[in-house]
Image (cartoon, rainbow, N blue to C red):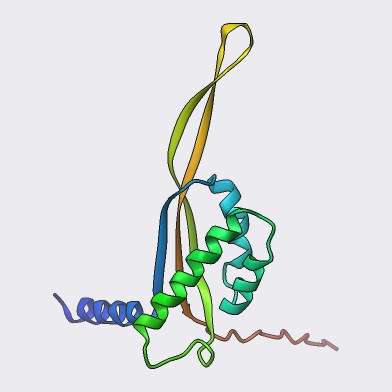
Length: 144
């Protein structure tokens, strides 16, 4: 292994020690419905994301709320010297992928049958420290 490759591997290993991951497999909700809720909390600070999910009317929010609390617990286990109150955390990445479909048959008129696809999904949440972004202010140049 070369020096650059080793340094890159050590850098990735150090990043993995700081971030926390939690995933849920085969959640019986369609991926489209889950993505609607996931898009709301992507990139949001942890406490704000928990509040959004707690007061959301969608059924998928309950599942995401539980998974986000699990991710926070994983972060606390990886970082025993730090607390959530002092460290600003955010939802760095949230991925909703489709899982297997259960195919069912529903009777239809005139002896026909319609296929029903009961969809499910896989969810992965990655929590990391909140990096403060500096908003660049563009100054207008006045030409005379």
